[in-house]
Length: 302
Image 1 (cartoon, rainbow, N blue to C red):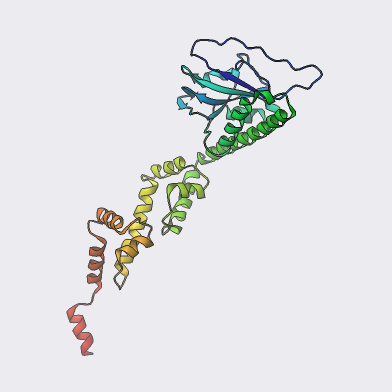
Image 2 (cartoon, rainbow, N blue to C red):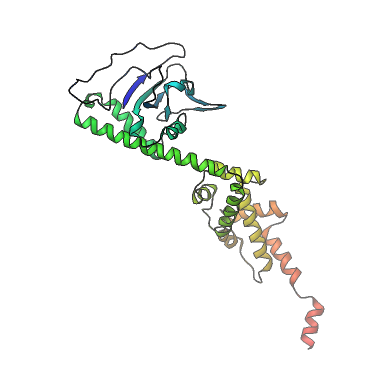
Protein backbone atom coordinates (compact mmCIF):
# COMPACT_ATOMS: atom_id res chain seq x y z
CA UNK A 1 0.00 0.00 0.00
CA UNK A 2 1.48 3.34 -1.01
CA UNK A 3 0.38 6.70 0.42
CA UNK A 4 0.87 9.62 -1.96
CA UNK A 5 0.48 13.27 -1.00
CA UNK A 6 -0.32 15.67 -3.85
CA UNK A 7 -1.45 19.29 -4.19
CA UNK A 8 -2.08 19.63 -7.94
CA UNK A 9 -3.12 22.72 -9.83
CA UNK A 10 -5.42 21.98 -12.79
CA UNK A 11 -2.71 22.18 -15.45
CA UNK A 12 0.56 21.96 -13.53
CA UNK A 13 2.42 18.70 -13.04
CA UNK A 14 4.27 18.09 -9.80
CA UNK A 15 7.94 17.09 -9.86
CA UNK A 16 8.67 13.46 -9.15
CA UNK A 17 9.97 12.68 -5.69
CA UNK A 18 12.59 10.12 -4.93
CA UNK A 19 11.11 6.65 -4.56
CA UNK A 20 12.72 4.73 -1.72
CA UNK A 21 13.82 1.27 -2.82
CA UNK A 22 13.83 -1.42 -0.13
CA UNK A 23 16.97 -3.50 0.26
CA UNK A 24 16.93 -6.64 -1.93
CA UNK A 25 17.25 -8.86 1.14
CA UNK A 26 13.94 -7.64 2.53
CA UNK A 27 10.48 -8.40 1.13
CA UNK A 28 8.60 -5.59 -0.62
CA UNK A 29 6.92 -3.30 1.87
CA UNK A 30 3.21 -2.76 1.97
CA UNK A 31 3.74 0.98 2.45
CA UNK A 32 6.04 3.16 0.35
CA UNK A 33 5.99 6.90 -0.38
CA UNK A 34 5.59 8.17 -3.96
CA UNK A 35 5.08 11.64 -5.36
CA UNK A 36 1.70 11.13 -7.03
CA UNK A 37 -0.58 8.64 -8.69
CA UNK A 38 1.22 7.49 -11.86
CA UNK A 39 -0.04 8.32 -15.34
CA UNK A 40 0.39 4.80 -16.70
CA UNK A 41 -2.35 2.21 -16.44
CA UNK A 42 -1.74 -0.08 -13.47
CA UNK A 43 -3.89 -3.21 -13.44
CA UNK A 44 -2.18 -4.62 -10.37
CA UNK A 45 -3.29 -1.88 -7.96
CA UNK A 46 -6.28 0.21 -6.96
CA UNK A 47 -5.74 3.74 -5.68
CA UNK A 48 -7.71 5.18 -2.80
CA UNK A 49 -7.80 8.94 -2.30
CA UNK A 50 -8.50 10.55 1.07
CA UNK A 51 -9.53 14.20 0.67
CA UNK A 52 -7.66 16.67 2.87
CA UNK A 53 -8.60 20.16 1.67
CA UNK A 54 -9.59 22.27 -1.30
CA UNK A 55 -12.08 21.68 -4.11
CA UNK A 56 -12.13 18.12 -5.43
CA UNK A 57 -15.06 16.74 -7.44
CA UNK A 58 -15.85 13.17 -8.45
CA UNK A 59 -17.25 13.14 -11.99
CA UNK A 60 -19.23 10.09 -13.08
CA UNK A 61 -21.15 10.63 -16.29
CA UNK A 62 -23.43 13.61 -15.71
CA UNK A 63 -23.22 13.35 -11.92
CA UNK A 64 -20.73 15.53 -10.06
CA UNK A 65 -20.13 14.96 -6.34
CA UNK A 66 -17.95 17.42 -4.38
CA UNK A 67 -15.79 15.75 -1.77
CA UNK A 68 -15.58 17.01 1.79
CA UNK A 69 -12.51 16.68 4.02
CA UNK A 70 -11.94 13.05 5.09
CA UNK A 71 -14.10 11.65 2.26
CA UNK A 72 -12.65 8.75 0.27
CA UNK A 73 -12.82 7.55 -3.33
CA UNK A 74 -11.31 4.58 -5.16
CA UNK A 75 -9.70 5.50 -8.47
CA UNK A 76 -7.52 4.16 -11.26
CA UNK A 77 -4.70 5.85 -13.25
CA UNK A 78 -6.50 4.81 -16.43
CA UNK A 79 -9.59 6.76 -15.32
CA UNK A 80 -8.06 9.96 -14.00
CA UNK A 81 -11.00 11.90 -15.45
CA UNK A 82 -13.10 10.67 -12.52
CA UNK A 83 -11.41 13.27 -10.30
CA UNK A 84 -11.45 17.01 -10.98
CA UNK A 85 -8.99 19.03 -8.88
CA UNK A 86 -9.30 22.73 -8.09
CA UNK A 87 -6.68 25.17 -6.88
CA UNK A 88 -4.86 24.54 -3.61
CA UNK A 89 -6.34 21.09 -3.11
CA UNK A 90 -4.70 18.21 -1.31
CA UNK A 91 -5.42 14.52 -1.15
CA UNK A 92 -3.63 11.51 0.28
CA UNK A 93 -3.50 8.59 -2.16
CA UNK A 94 -2.96 4.97 -1.18
CA UNK A 95 -1.90 2.35 -3.71
CA UNK A 96 -3.42 -1.01 -2.77
CA UNK A 97 -2.62 -4.33 -4.45
CA UNK A 98 -5.85 -5.64 -5.94
CA UNK A 99 -5.04 -9.19 -4.83
CA UNK A 100 -5.20 -8.17 -1.13
CA UNK A 101 -8.76 -6.82 -1.21
CA UNK A 102 -10.62 -10.12 -1.56
CA UNK A 103 -12.67 -9.05 -4.59
CA UNK A 104 -12.70 -9.97 -8.27
CA UNK A 105 -11.51 -7.61 -11.01
CA UNK A 106 -15.08 -6.76 -12.14
CA UNK A 107 -16.11 -6.13 -8.52
CA UNK A 108 -13.21 -3.75 -7.93
CA UNK A 109 -14.06 -1.89 -11.13
CA UNK A 110 -17.58 -1.35 -9.77
CA UNK A 111 -16.29 0.64 -6.78
CA UNK A 112 -14.11 3.01 -8.83
CA UNK A 113 -15.37 6.58 -8.66
CA UNK A 114 -17.86 5.88 -5.84
CA UNK A 115 -17.55 8.64 -3.18
CA UNK A 116 -17.45 7.40 0.41
CA UNK A 117 -18.33 9.80 3.21
CA UNK A 118 -15.58 9.89 5.81
CA UNK A 119 -17.82 10.92 8.67
CA UNK A 120 -19.83 7.76 9.18
CA UNK A 121 -19.58 3.98 9.32
CA UNK A 122 -16.63 2.09 7.88
CA UNK A 123 -15.73 5.19 5.85
CA UNK A 124 -14.99 7.10 9.05
CA UNK A 125 -12.87 4.24 10.43
CA UNK A 126 -10.89 3.88 7.20
CA UNK A 127 -10.39 7.61 6.74
CA UNK A 128 -9.14 8.19 10.27
CA UNK A 129 -6.85 5.18 10.27
CA UNK A 130 -5.33 5.92 6.86
CA UNK A 131 -4.76 9.58 7.68
CA UNK A 132 -2.92 8.61 10.86
CA UNK A 133 -0.94 5.97 8.95
CA UNK A 134 0.24 8.50 6.38
CA UNK A 135 1.22 10.98 9.09
CA UNK A 136 3.45 8.47 10.89
CA UNK A 137 6.04 8.13 8.15
CA UNK A 138 8.77 7.15 10.56
CA UNK A 139 7.04 3.88 11.44
CA UNK A 140 6.62 2.63 7.89
CA UNK A 141 9.74 0.51 7.91
CA UNK A 142 9.12 -1.01 11.30
CA UNK A 143 7.24 -4.14 12.28
CA UNK A 144 4.59 -1.91 13.83
CA UNK A 145 4.20 -0.05 10.55
CA UNK A 146 3.76 -3.33 8.66
CA UNK A 147 1.03 -4.43 11.08
CA UNK A 148 -0.75 -1.10 10.62
CA UNK A 149 -0.53 -1.46 6.86
CA UNK A 150 -2.11 -4.91 7.04
CA UNK A 151 -4.87 -3.49 9.26
CA UNK A 152 -5.46 -0.75 6.69
CA UNK A 153 -5.76 -3.33 3.90
CA UNK A 154 -8.30 -5.26 5.99
CA UNK A 155 -10.32 -2.09 6.58
CA UNK A 156 -10.33 -1.32 2.87
CA UNK A 157 -11.44 -4.85 2.00
CA UNK A 158 -14.41 -4.39 4.36
CA UNK A 159 -15.13 -1.02 2.73
CA UNK A 160 -15.09 -2.63 -0.73
CA UNK A 161 -17.55 -5.29 0.44
CA UNK A 162 -19.90 -2.61 1.81
CA UNK A 163 -19.79 -0.66 -1.46
CA UNK A 164 -20.52 -3.81 -3.44
CA UNK A 165 -23.43 -4.69 -1.15
CA UNK A 166 -24.89 -1.19 -1.54
CA UNK A 167 -24.50 -1.41 -5.32
CA UNK A 168 -26.26 -4.79 -5.39
CA UNK A 169 -29.09 -3.46 -3.24
CA UNK A 170 -29.49 -0.49 -5.56
CA UNK A 171 -29.72 -2.77 -8.58
CA UNK A 172 -32.38 -4.85 -6.82
CA UNK A 173 -34.35 -1.70 -6.04
CA UNK A 174 -34.37 -0.76 -9.72
CA UNK A 175 -35.54 -4.20 -10.88
CA UNK A 176 -38.93 -4.24 -12.68
CA UNK A 177 -41.80 -4.79 -10.25
CA UNK A 178 -39.57 -4.55 -7.19
CA UNK A 179 -40.82 -1.07 -6.34
CA UNK A 180 -44.52 -2.04 -6.23
CA UNK A 181 -43.89 -5.02 -3.98
CA UNK A 182 -41.66 -3.00 -1.68
CA UNK A 183 -44.16 -0.16 -1.50
CA UNK A 184 -46.85 -2.60 -0.38
CA UNK A 185 -44.58 -3.82 2.41
CA UNK A 186 -43.83 -0.23 3.41
CA UNK A 187 -47.55 0.58 3.57
CA UNK A 188 -48.12 -2.44 5.81
CA UNK A 189 -45.24 -1.38 8.05
CA UNK A 190 -46.70 2.11 8.39
CA UNK A 191 -50.11 0.73 9.34
CA UNK A 192 -48.50 -1.48 11.98
CA UNK A 193 -46.53 1.41 13.53
CA UNK A 194 -48.98 4.24 12.91
CA UNK A 195 -49.29 5.00 16.64
CA UNK A 196 -45.51 5.12 17.12
CA UNK A 197 -44.43 8.78 17.58
CA UNK A 198 -40.94 7.85 16.32
CA UNK A 199 -42.26 6.66 12.95
CA UNK A 200 -40.30 8.63 10.36
CA UNK A 201 -38.83 8.26 6.85
CA UNK A 202 -35.52 7.32 8.47
CA UNK A 203 -37.02 4.57 10.66
CA UNK A 204 -39.09 3.21 7.76
CA UNK A 205 -36.09 3.11 5.41
CA UNK A 206 -33.95 1.47 8.09
CA UNK A 207 -36.56 -1.25 8.69
CA UNK A 208 -36.56 -2.14 4.98
CA UNK A 209 -32.80 -1.84 4.42
CA UNK A 210 -33.12 0.91 1.82
CA UNK A 211 -32.02 4.51 1.63
CA UNK A 212 -34.33 7.41 2.53
CA UNK A 213 -33.77 8.72 -1.01
CA UNK A 214 -35.11 5.51 -2.55
CA UNK A 215 -38.02 5.43 -0.08
CA UNK A 216 -39.00 8.95 -1.13
CA UNK A 217 -38.72 7.86 -4.77
CA UNK A 218 -41.22 5.04 -4.17
CA UNK A 219 -43.79 7.45 -2.78
CA UNK A 220 -43.05 10.09 -5.42
CA UNK A 221 -43.96 7.57 -8.12
CA UNK A 222 -47.22 7.03 -6.19
CA UNK A 223 -47.96 10.77 -6.19
CA UNK A 224 -47.17 11.45 -2.54
CA UNK A 225 -44.38 11.70 0.01
CA UNK A 226 -43.66 9.49 3.00
CA UNK A 227 -44.64 12.18 5.50
CA UNK A 228 -47.85 13.01 3.64
CA UNK A 229 -48.86 9.36 3.56
CA UNK A 230 -48.23 8.87 7.29
CA UNK A 231 -50.06 12.08 8.16
CA UNK A 232 -53.07 11.19 6.02
CA UNK A 233 -53.39 7.70 7.50
CA UNK A 234 -53.12 9.08 11.03
CA UNK A 235 -55.79 11.69 10.34
CA UNK A 236 -58.12 9.10 8.79
CA UNK A 237 -57.68 6.90 11.85
CA UNK A 238 -58.38 9.82 14.18
CA UNK A 239 -61.50 10.84 12.25
CA UNK A 240 -62.80 7.27 12.34
CA UNK A 241 -62.18 6.94 16.07
CA UNK A 242 -63.73 10.33 16.89
CA UNK A 243 -66.79 9.49 14.78
CA UNK A 244 -67.56 6.11 16.28
CA UNK A 245 -66.77 6.80 19.92
CA UNK A 246 -69.72 7.02 22.27
CA UNK A 247 -67.76 9.07 24.80
CA UNK A 248 -65.86 12.33 24.62
CA UNK A 249 -62.15 11.98 23.93
CA UNK A 250 -59.77 14.79 24.80
CA UNK A 251 -57.67 16.17 21.96
CA UNK A 252 -54.55 15.67 24.08
CA UNK A 253 -55.27 11.95 24.39
CA UNK A 254 -56.05 11.64 20.67
CA UNK A 255 -52.86 13.48 19.66
CA UNK A 256 -50.73 11.34 21.97
CA UNK A 257 -52.30 8.09 20.82
CA UNK A 258 -51.75 8.72 17.11
CA UNK A 259 -48.24 10.12 17.19
CA UNK A 260 -48.85 13.86 16.83
CA UNK A 261 -46.34 16.14 18.52
CA UNK A 262 -48.96 18.15 20.45
CA UNK A 263 -52.73 18.73 20.71
CA UNK A 264 -52.40 22.08 18.93
CA UNK A 265 -50.48 20.48 16.06
CA UNK A 266 -53.10 17.76 15.81
CA UNK A 267 -55.95 20.28 15.76
CA UNK A 268 -54.29 22.45 13.08
CA UNK A 269 -53.54 19.46 10.88
CA UNK A 270 -57.05 18.04 11.29
CA UNK A 271 -58.69 21.39 10.47
CA UNK A 272 -56.46 21.81 7.42
CA UNK A 273 -57.48 18.39 6.09
CA UNK A 274 -61.23 18.39 6.89
CA UNK A 275 -62.21 22.05 7.32
CA UNK A 276 -63.27 21.73 10.96
CA UNK A 277 -61.67 21.09 14.33
CA UNK A 278 -61.50 17.58 15.81
CA UNK A 279 -63.92 18.55 18.57
CA UNK A 280 -66.41 19.94 16.03
CA UNK A 281 -66.19 16.71 14.02
CA UNK A 282 -66.74 14.67 17.17
CA UNK A 283 -69.79 16.73 18.13
CA UNK A 284 -71.19 16.48 14.59
CA UNK A 285 -70.72 12.72 14.52
CA UNK A 286 -72.33 12.37 17.95
CA UNK A 287 -75.41 14.40 16.92
CA UNK A 288 -75.81 12.42 13.70
CA UNK A 289 -76.09 9.16 15.61
CA UNK A 290 -78.07 10.54 18.58
CA UNK A 291 -81.70 9.28 18.80
CA UNK A 292 -84.39 11.75 17.72
CA UNK A 293 -87.07 13.19 20.11
CA UNK A 294 -89.83 11.00 18.60
CA UNK A 295 -87.69 7.90 18.91
CA UNK A 296 -87.06 8.70 22.55
CA UNK A 297 -90.80 9.16 23.28
CA UNK A 298 -91.69 5.91 21.53
CA UNK A 299 -89.02 4.09 23.49
CA UNK A 300 -90.40 5.45 26.77
CA UNK A 301 -94.02 4.50 25.83
CA UNK A 302 -93.24 0.85 25.36
